[in-house]
Length: 95
Image 1 (cartoon, rainbow, N blue to C red):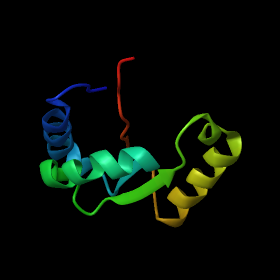
Image 2: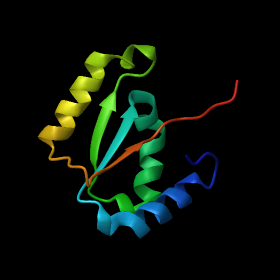
Image 3: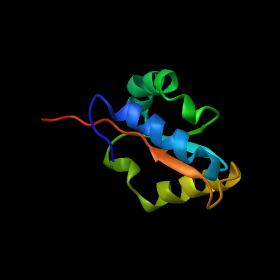
């Protein structure tokens, strides 16, 4: 888990180093994270180029068994294997 202003650099380094072991890269976000963070990720993490984007609705409504099944189905349809990498990109905020 990486948090803070250097997290994008850490993610890019980690994925670039390990990338030869992964057959595909999947990126999971909610709607808000996709809107505010995905553009920066595309610019700052070249190592994940060619990723498949999975998106869920934000909030507790997404944390359900039905959504998990939908995500598993989408991953399987997109050719995910045990050699695939799934990155869960989220926002972190203090309150």
